[in-house]
Image 1 (tube, rainbow, N blue to C red):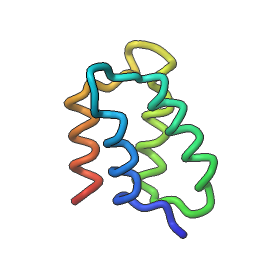
Image 2: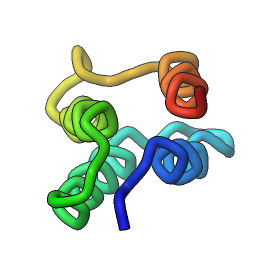
Image 3: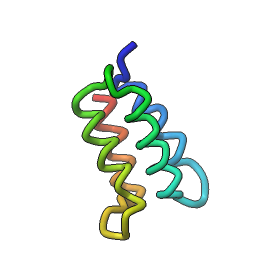
Image 4: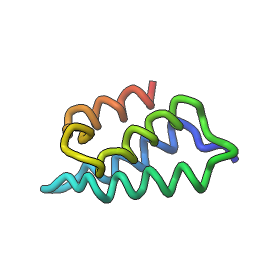
Length: 77
């Protein structure tokens, strides 16, 4: 089964609920997801996962809640 934009958007959205945005958890999920689905992944999703995986590398790589929500919306188009 291919890892689609729809699956990606639903899984990412889970991290956007609650009081605190945990960039490290999102980065770990993104990296693990990329490795798990390396052979059947949508090209756009692959790029997004790479960007999300970099969020624990420093403040300059962290996306805001609004940016993450926008990414979910784009993935659902």
